[in-house]
Image (cartoon, rainbow, N blue to C red; front, side, top):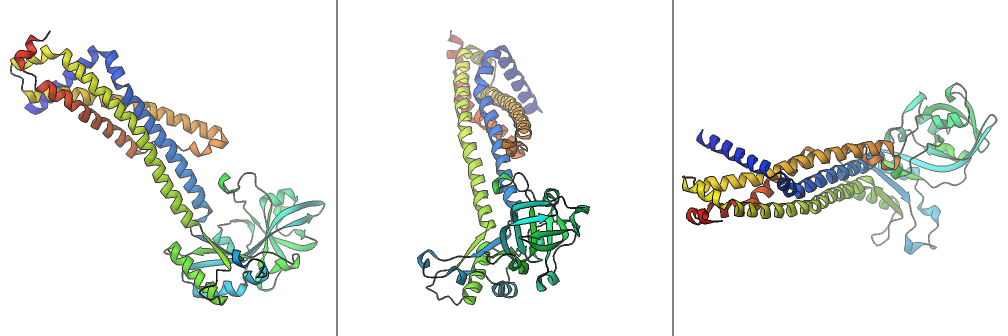
Length: 417
């Protein structure tokens, strides 16, 4: 009870001293205010940018692996590119023997001329895929049906178009049941795909027409295309283990000797995500450290002002000691003043930081190029860090003036002019 009363009186005395010197108190806390304001606003902005980048990568598929045929640099001119092309036989080998492979689809991509009635479009993206492609790429069907194994085995001239192609080719009744011509070859539209919007990082923007046909039907209108595998790894598969397993299967299928280079390329998105996450943590930590320097500068200002305050109030300290105040009470009083000053500065800085964050959100929603800032927010750990650091600065930089005040000789203090 006595301790609580002493603490209450000490805090009341500290507040009275700050109120009596309002201008000095504001100027003293200015470094803390700017530091907390900067650190919260920077963490909110950097965190929003990091989350945006990670979301973009994860939406593209963190469990995906892309495999393609590739002529090694040292073998260029010595190996025909046809010899390194991926084959359906290799795809089947990976499906049946690679435990880290959950799903796999052969994919061929080309551009072709499309005709539907009086409408004609050139350079339209046409992809030959296998049925598993739809689940790997998370492509939704808004009308009709996806491709099936019968389409693939019978090399049926059927196609799916996205809703953008339905608009551009002016297809009737939503597109399903309509006939389109790819390089003069007639294909029946059996389904409509929802257009998948990609972010700016992956070439997103204005949606374009897409046509999807069975992989085996690509040869109906194209003599050459470069196949690749789109692989979805199992949930528990490690990126490096999956890479090693796929390499082993393909090298075995191609009868490559240990000294022979790979005649294929591999790319796993999870490895990119790991790098991006590491960069995000490093960027946040670096920004926090740099901005935290301003808090240290503010702490030095607090210490200087508190030393001045001790000098100005020497007689008061001597009088309090003369009537029985212990050195501990004097120390706690001055330490409380320093901590309260810092905490007050931290609170004002946090309010300004939140205002800046709201401004960043509005800016991100109104300016498309700053979309990444649209979900900026100050995380709870940053608020705790700001207040904790402010209190720590008050304790560390207020301790010396408080100790100096507590050690003053009362007789010498009363003589002080």
